[in-house]
Amino acid sequence: MTIEMAGVPGTTLMDRAGRGVADIVLSVTRMSGGGAPNTYLFAGRGNNGGDVFAAARHLKEEGAAVRVWMAGAESDVRGDAFWHLSKMKEAGIELNAVPTKDDWESLDFDQDGEVLVDGILGIGTRGPARGPAVGAIQMINNLSDGRLVVAIDIPSGLDADTGEAIGDTVRADVTVTMGLPKKGLATAAAMDFVGSLEVVDIGIPAEYVAETPSDLELITHGDLRPLFQRRGAHSHKGTFGHLLIVAGSASLSGAAAMAARAAARAGAGLVTLAVPESIFSVVAPAVPEAMVHGLAETADGRLAADALDGWGHALDGFTAVLAGPGMTASDSTFASVELLLERTSVPMVLDADALNVLPGRAEMLRAHGERLILTPHPGEMARLLECDTDEIQGDRMASALRAAEVTGATVVLKGAGSIVVAPGRTPWVNVTGNPGMATGGMGDVLAGVLGGLLAQGQKPFDAARAAVYVHGHAGDSAAWRTSQTGLIASDVIEELAYAFRAVTPR
Image 1 (tube, rainbow, N blue to C red):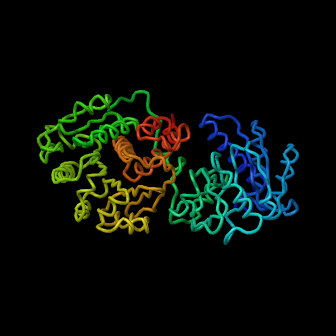
Image 2: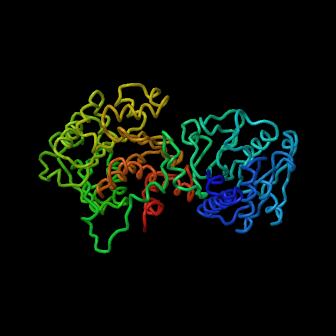
């Protein structure tokens, strides 16, 4: 439509795609502490190959050393891709054509390449890779250890509609997709191949996007920017809300502290933290920005059933509530959750143990559903819906939709490709984040971000979309700067301040 109706030449769109790939390659390598990288680019015979040729030229202009190989004969290149091949050659970049699978197997690559760019197969491919494309895909995967792999539009070999890998498929660290995300990239099946997903704006008019129907949306920074307004010069801490966090137990004091730190990083004006009195002296110094209160507790260090009732604070005087991190599942925890539901009317996040006390009681949430955000991981979702975790993971979307229907709440089903659903709303999926975030405390950080955004007045569904994106983006940035292996929850909290740059005016 953009080419035929808006009159934008295909060569222009291809150039924008190549520029986007080059920008992301440079951004990620610089974030990791490197400069303009030695880059090996692998092209196919179609439009993905044209994106490769454009990207190679832009990378060279930025000082990167580039080498380009093509899975096929040079004479196979046609149309817009041929135009960009000519421009690439004019820039002094040689094309190494490798026309058969046997030719790929006989190649001996040196070890200079720091980045591998996959532009072999595009979204029109059906069935498994064949011929020289197989050799090129295998070469990328064989060379991938210790190198950054960037896929253009979709990892070669992946089905763009289903996300299934059929035959040889590139395993990317970053996928740079053009214009709009492809549905297959957001499926659980694709997560091991896609890596981090970046969407490049190539200039498709907004009205064309609006009239293209979809039953699934990907959360991007562009979707979230309208939710964040520039802060006024005369703002004060009361302007940005007051969050109450009810959390912690004698054995899990860190969960309360991390949730509170994350809420402060998310911009909440004031954070009050209610914890069992025995951990007050541990939690208070860990979060100097928060007002920490030690409340009555049970003999084993949990909040007492009547702790909030006898506290003396008006629970409905806060602008939002977060309950659950580190509380442990017990009758006294259930009593606290029940009291918060009855005594407040403000938006509320129920996380971790606030959910673990609800098996068989999910429908009690319906009367409060519009103001609630539930944040289960698959095990917690299984307990909430009284089924097996395998059933949840077997169809994550159906499980999330069922939970939203039963509870009437906004539901965030955490995991690779976190899903955000609410009754009557199109489901949204988030693909920021990485396997390094599979470590203790990450859920507490997400819950704190959610609470901080609710306290500032964001609606539950909007806060959920923003929180999962920023949380994952912070995790990705922290992993690029350090490593996935060494990533801990505190790293993500520190990175939140920078991650919010992607969605906020300042």
